[in-house]
Amino acid sequence: MVVAALVAVSVVLGGLILLLAVWRQKGREVSEPEPSDYKANGQAVPEKQLSKKQKPQKPRKEKTRQHTFTHPLLASALKAHSGNITCLDFSSNGKYLASCSDDRTVRLWSTKDFLEREHRCMRANVDFDHATRVRFSPDCRTFIVWLANGDTIRVFKMTKKDDSFIFSAAHDDFPKRHKASIINIGIAETGKFIMTASDDTSILIWDMKGEVLASINTNQVANSYATVSPCGRFVASCGFTSDVKVWEVCFGKAGEFREVCRAFELKGHSAGVCGFAFSNDSRRMATVSKDGTWKLWNTDVEYKKQQDPYLLFTGQWCGREPCRIALSPDGRVVAIASVSDITVYNAQTGQIEEEFNSVHGEIISDLGFDTTNRFIVSTGDRAIRVFHNTAGYRAAIVDLKELLKKATNKGMKDRLQQQIKDAQNALDDVCKQGK
Image 1 (cartoon, helix red, strand yellow):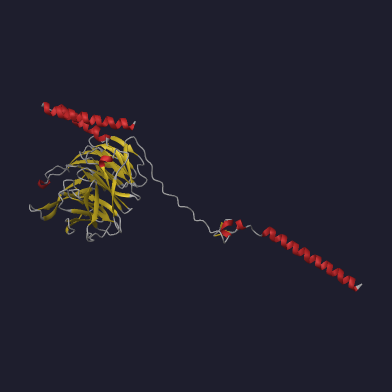
Image 2 (tube, rainbow, N blue to C red):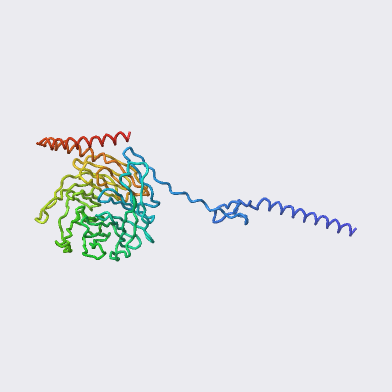
């Protein structure tokens, strides 16, 4: 009996243990998460990442899409740079356009290809650095760049071979002199000096070999823009204050440097001046200000006799900063870039002639007219946009017709009539292409 009772108790206990084991196993099946439920840093980890044999795949980097822009007046888009373009400059003979980029190259484009499908360019490499500013020399045989990391000027000589150039950098860069970031550089058309300006209040005048001739304190709190006049006599600057200051860089008869003296000032804005530009003959200047106006000035004055420049026209603009302004070579057209938009005005009437919106994918870094007055060029990303200057043709036709009314001899009338006809034909051709 005792043995039978012990066997019975053992069977019962064994059954209980078996039931407990089965219950625990079912509990694990219910509560244990699937591999896909594991988390890393609070995020679900895919099942593939738990396998030691399979390595996690790195997400592919999406390529930055090139900004697209179309317009009936867009003559061409020059694309060769792989980085953002920071500066443009036309050679004085009008044959070439130089562009520099953070891709460590300077590109030279042939202006005669602007209307072609293929746009040829030559490349100059900027070793161990990249250029933020580029300027042609007056003889178009060299160009200078401002080095972003070196904070100085490097000179490149251009040697022509067949239909292309060979570029060679000078052995030594200019010495470092500026203490703040550079906003612009320039070469006088006379070939006598180089200008560099920084965003504090300093402008330096250099000789062509890299020696500092003079230092200018603009006293404008902070410089926003500075440049050399196309005639090569003046240096001008604007900044936090509401005026534009112009100095004359004086040389002796033998070509020796003498002094930098104040020439004149442009006064009339009620807020800081963002930028300014000269006409090709330096007899006109255009300014744009934070006060929401742009102004056209006659600077062909006898400043040595204390004659001040006088205001020709005040126009309104409702754009945003940062902005840039350009004046056509003949002084008839003003173009203002506001962030990534461009507005083109008749300089005499203030009428808006053309509007180009979202021209570039980044803030417009440079804006200008070619030397022939046919095109407006801009950049702000990896492309250079070239527009037909239809506003220039229209303004020229109006001016020429007014001159025709005043003409007194047959020879002058014939010349004016031919110029009117040529301008009208050019305008008609552009309009036909845009349709």
